[in-house]
Image (cartoon, rainbow, N blue to C red; front, side, top):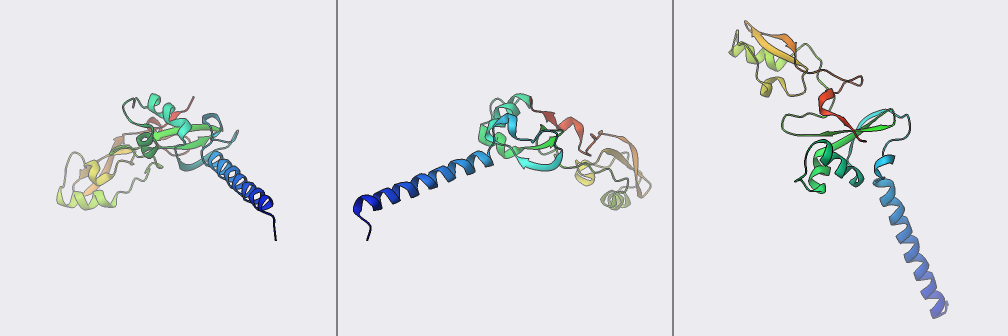
Amino acid sequence: MLSKELRRLVRLVAVLTALAAMGSRAEAADPPAGAVCAPAVTDDTLRPLPAALAPVAKRLFDLPKMTDAQVRRSTVFRCVDGKALLCTTGANLPCGKANVSRSLPAGAAWCKQHPDSSDIPMSVTGHDTIYRWRCAGPSAEVVGIAATVDARGFIGRFWKAAD
């Protein structure tokens, strides 16, 4: 049987080990601002915003009145050439890859009910399409480009580089 002092020492070591493990997990899950992307790595995975980038997002997207928690819930980042790019979502701000398809089944269905309409509403086209659409008779037709995509296929104007 272990002595009272030895049992206390074993418990202390266990507590310190647990605290050290919690600290290293927290650091790994929430890296500092300059270390969220590995050097020269490009990865299109949208990730939750770490706490260290909340002030950066507030400045880049002019969100001074939002709390850091609100900014973190609405902002994602991805890595391009080792640099973090940030996007804040909104009702009309898609952060995912752009829809570059020139086929629009929902638009075609809408045009059957609204032939020759000069435009198709975004509630039908989606906010991720890069095209402007209209109805040519009962068919959906592209009439122009509404947004440009970056080299990775995202709508470029929604993404900003973290300094």
